[in-house]
Length: 359
Image (cartoon, rainbow, N blue to C red; front, side, top):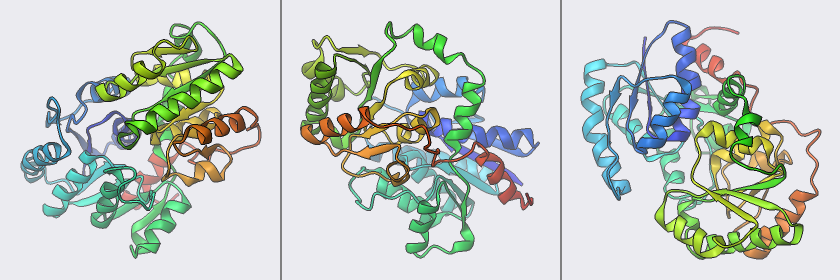
């Protein structure tokens, strides 16, 4: 059996690398195709995990559009699939890379394995284009690796055959265990922030750019001023995000605006924060591993397990609702809450399933 693993963004590397490395440890024939949808951030994460791509599609361009990414991948990946003839192509999540590569594999009659299948917000345009991407991937996949029972239920309700669906947990927990065992997070954190108590804030979601983002920032600023607490905000590279952030809170003394940090440094910040406010999907999964409460600054979430487990609140994007959610977060205790996203053994489960190895 030959296995192809594809990724093109930082979150994909984080969640694919543990699976790929487990396959390599088992002496499987496996190789990586990197699309470089996000060049710099992808390369940085590959270095963290010590992995290399056999093929690099190098699709990233200045001011790239979704259509240009799709077109480039669909031109460059098929010749590789024809040359290598893998038995299974692994994609992760809901990126444009994952969707485009899954379609290419389908066209080449290569089986698709979807890591993190079944997530749904049930709103095709929120998040955009991720909700459409993951639905398309699940339709063409032979192996659907659902991270939770709720994700599995979503797939069954859509009519996908149950014998294609496997509940395995989320590979992000595998990745976090690998990283926390390899790096001194408190020491790294001390190099970034000079204070011990702070709120961590991340904003980047496309549908939040504009008035929604201004409202979120205003709510966080109000809470920070009331509680006299610092807010650490790694400012996303998107120029539209940067403009809003600097215009809204650039001169606020409670905010420490920093450039985007590498993933390990971000985990150091996450480990040490009071709680986190974010519109990120990945952070919703990472925070429970560190016992941190999440204020989800979005109108929908495809990770309802976070809310149901008591680790987070879906706050919307209005200033009042964000502020109220932060007040609730400040009063929440998580001493007995269990991580809803897994136990760090997802990579092994995936390998056993595709190889037909019993527990």
